[in-house]
Every structure is written in structure tokens, then in C-alpha cells.
Length: 179
Image (cartoon, rainbow, N blue to C red; front, side, top):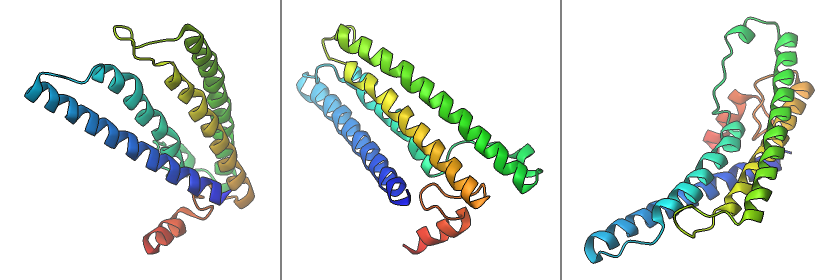
């Protein structure tokens, strides 16, 4: 599972970086062509809004989960004993799995509907329906990550296990600095 998580983390990071760089190059080329040659790239605003930005935002959700960079409020949980923390952590992961699967299911229904309609960006004829399939894919991955996180916590009885390394957070961050 650790290899899967590390590979997924690298893949998400690389994909997101590629999308950010592509968006940057696209927008800069659009601006330069419009300014110097009065020939902007057709549909740049739609491509940015319907392709680049959703990809960046959606790919960031599981990446943040893998890197434990998501927002968590631990005020009440820190005062509990270890067993209660483990129970609440697993309960939170179970809720996360259910919500993620719900978003994936309804996202898939919406993506299939958009595909059958042949959805475009509205004013232009730039297709947008393929990006709708990113929603169910990302939330299915998120459900899997919640299951893996719950598994790690149940197995180790430690709520600060890194999803990327399967080790205690302090130890995994030290290993990351060395590597």
C-alpha cells in the first residue's frame, strides 16, 4: 500500500504541475498573441475555466489528503485517550468513504449525462464533458485513501500515521528530509 500511495502522490503532483505549467503557457501565449498580433487563441477563457482549473482543484484534494495538508480540527480529539482518538479517526474515515462514494456516484451520473449531451463550454464549441469524469475518479481515489488511512490507524493504534509512508508522521518527515 505504501508503494501505491507514494506512486499516487507523485502522479498527482506531476499531473497537477503539468496542468499548471500548461495553463501558464497557454495564457501567456494568448496574451502575447492578442497584444502583438491581435490574434488571441480561440477559447482560452473557456479552456482555463472548464479544463485547467477543475483539474488543478480536483487533483489537489487527494494530494492534500496523502500529504496530510488538509484542514483538520483536533481540539476535542487531542483531549481524548488514544483508544477514543482511534475510534473517532476511523469513524471520520468511514464518513469520508461514504461521502466520497456519494460524490463519485452522483458525479458519474452527471458526467454520463454531460457526455450524452455532448456538453460544450456554452458560448464556444469547445467540448467540456470529458472533465466531468474527473469528479468520480478523484472521489473514488479519496474513498480508497480513507479506507487505507483507517486500516493504518486500526493496525497501528496511532492516528498520526502518514498515508504516504505508513510510518509515524514525525519519523516519515525526517525520512523525507534525508531522502
